[in-house]
Length: 198
Ligand code: ZN
Image 1: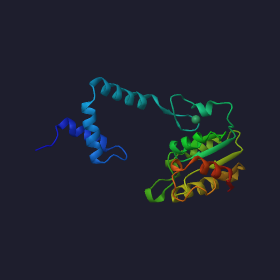
Image 2 (image 1 turned 60 degrees about the horizontal axis):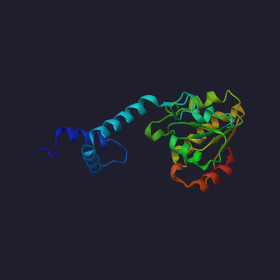
Image 3 (image 1 turned 180 degrees about the horizontal axis):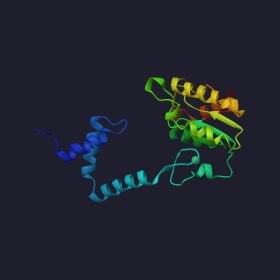
Image 4 (image 1 turned 90 degrees about the horizontal axis):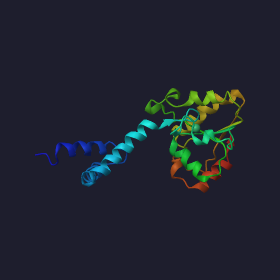
């Protein structure tokens, strides 16, 4: 005999597909939704659909934005000649939270990983190189210090060096294998200030 009705099972299955949600949590979330007032469930579903439909990648840095150009790229007060390259939007958010970085970003949406079959063409690297046609004085590589992050940093530096643009790497104050988003602001700032030439 099925423990739950088909509808509940379907809901549990959907929750279980989310990152970090195991089967127990999926059950708990599904049962919670069933007990929510119908109008709250509708509002929740509608917000998800609208977010998915209306949020795009910024045409310049590829972070998520409601507009074609994100507020950071559209801000004339930022230094558009200094681009910090990060693996994902969470890393961008971590640096942005320090409030001390005045340049702009470039979100790669991943890192090169031969093991996982992720090559240079699978991340937003071409888009970064294209940006260098503009007036760029420095590219700060702030990928994670994991194997993938280091591989990506090396690859980018080799690609950029011949263009004459200054390439730096954030200092290794960031622990090896450490996710940028889990590291406190002081460590991030120290890593940024102690960046080294590549
Ligand atoms: Zn942007």
